[in-house]
Image (cartoon, rainbow, N blue to C red; front, top):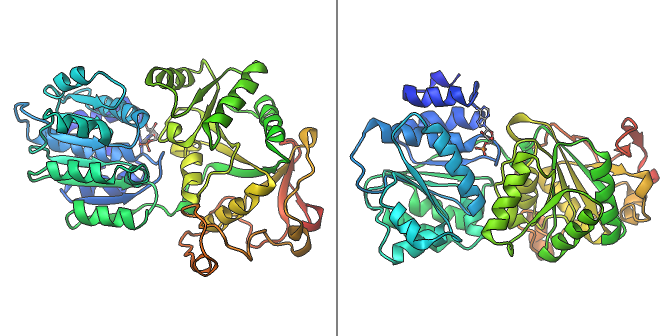
Length: 449
Ligand code: AMP
């Protein structure tokens, strides 16, 4: 129950209004620690309820000391516009019974309008790049900030925002609390940021990567080439039961191409990638939310942090380039305890990457065949001979970063994650294969694959 937290009654009223009954694990762990005023470093997946975990204590703090509105009192930094927009909505929902005002500062919107808005809000939610532009123009005073949140900090670093985030954190020069959230444990860049911006932080590690997406089944389907993958996508969209689907490609060109194919087959879809302007991106997300379209074709950057109710099917047209990116992608589905299905389409050149991600997650994805669109490629030949996943001898790719590594280094790649409870065969032996998504799962010998 949310009443277990020492939150202002107006915040509890908003929580009740939103029909949140039980707090999620990240909320149980982070809310009391944040209410005590500690700096926090929280590792928690997208979809775990982490937004409320930082928004509620932040609002509580601002409400506890109602100052006349003279300057910005809290800042939430996020990597993308879409995520910033979503967070603004969450903040507005939680602050609906308070006098606290929030505003959004992201690229692609009118600079002067934003500059005027900066003088009227308590909480500023934005992407680092545009906020730095306002700081450079002398519009942004952060010396009275009481709470600074860095959400998806690992992603902000991946996107090259380290310096901007650092500068903005330094601009918060008064006494303040900093809450840093990341979906992954990150690398040395994140450690450096933690050391620079957090003071004696409490570290809450909610889940290792393999604990993610408990409600999501993860499957692979082998494919001969991109054309075969396109036919598999068409088949899946026509035959799977789902409310809304997202299909990830690694390139804008492939996203546009697949989108064109789907539209030609009368599939109601939208495409979202970095070349789309802000209006198109907003339209795509709104239409998906409203249910006017069921299918979104997207690249990673465009879909980062997307939170759409009922998104229960994720298809990896291309395998993501790293284990962390895979986790981010399938984090779109199975959110807040919902059920989901994640299917990766695997050509021969995706196989090693796929099996390195399996090793990283300590999971074995369910193998699936679709009889109607069956191809020739069924996985590497040595899989049949040895019954082992391919790529176990040559660990050429660092599954965490997706980068190629020298043999020696690869052998040392640490695997921190625990074995998941889903898709949890204990050996590399017989696999579970479902046929066309219709027949019950049945056992096959490795040789039959
Ligand atoms: P987040 O990880 O913050 O993006 O949250 C994912 C989704 O879960 C959002 O749609 C939230 O509104 C929802 N959510 C967060 N906390 C709860 C809760 N305690 N009960 C029900 N839904 C929640």
